[in-house]
Image (cartoon, rainbow, N blue to C red):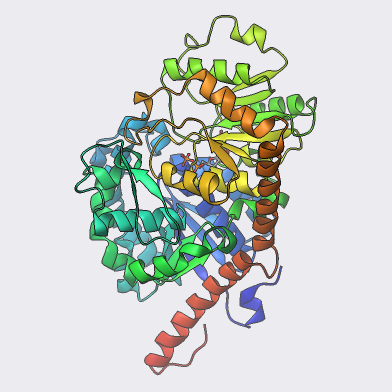
Length: 497
Ligand code: UDP
């Protein structure tokens, strides 16, 4: 791939990346750092020890392949934030307490300020959870770029709800109302909104206070693609007044990565063994026959819900590969389940090589919690999906899959809660029916599979040379150079960066 730096005969940019303490944010930002490095950028990722361990294999493999990329560790402020040593990622906390990781963010500021001041990069690319990095960037005379780990629709809906307060006169939490002004009709219930929009949370206050900081950023990097979410660009630009760069699906760039199998699971002792186990099992399955079910990096279900999930996968009649994060016992497992599904179902505890599995020929459908990365990874693999959102902005993401692109079906039509996902149990029969509607024979399922394949082709074209997201990455680099050129010419200096 051409290096934008070389092409323009300029010195390579040095960018520092500040990821948030969640795998769904860390993994794509490391991918972005890597694919910028492929274009000649010198990328440094600032990470605390436990988070660095998750991505070290990926970064080391990229560096060994000759890319300018490195990790720079800084201490996690455990004592200051009141979090136990070793708890540095939301996946180390129960879902109901994962917001506590945000307590640490203000305490990282002095260290980050010191490191960024010491190394003086050409720009800071910081997760949206670190809004005050704009002040550091200003002091250093460099631009700050924001990384948004969710899609453009989620940004638009969140801002719409904050500004227009459409739920203010709605008495019931489970009543769906239209969200106005978006390019297509969209119905949501208050209970389906991310918790930071309905309750006071540290992150909620951060984003409310940070809207001016957002605007002061050079722009927002979005892991999405124009053919998927371009329809929201006008609305986004109007309400945020900030430039977005589409650069995704970033995981699609990964087909040649040697660290593929441990992507994001580097510190998980289960990752390597799980990979060998499931690839061997999948090699014995028929093409497009297996339902892959995985619910991201930090979600957890109650035993009752896990039991129903097991029965639903069994009742679907299709082979399945089910990734279970809940490590505490198996008492929820229905009596005789493992014996009955032997050979047809594989339960995988811990970390799965998700991107690699989704592109495996034996996988035919994806049961997903609608985390943003999982949605993009499902779309990129051309798989129809059963959508089972459980929290954060996942009920918004689901709309893209089920309503806008019709490449998936909801696991249940019950209105559930993003704040208390285990309040409403999804029954086995609902899951089995949803799986059947995308896996069984028939025109409806075939239409879903065809649309999924077509959308995947568009995703691949977006990241291919000359595609919309390939241009997005190049534009991002160019915009940073232009920012520096403008600064120098304003100061009357020779432009040499
Ligand atoms: N992931 C994985 N193996 C697992 C669980 C998750 O590789 O066993 C990856 C998945 O491919 C995705 C990320 O972790 O890239 C999870 O991000 P997402 O936004 O889907 O969900 P979150 O974990 O943030 O809820």
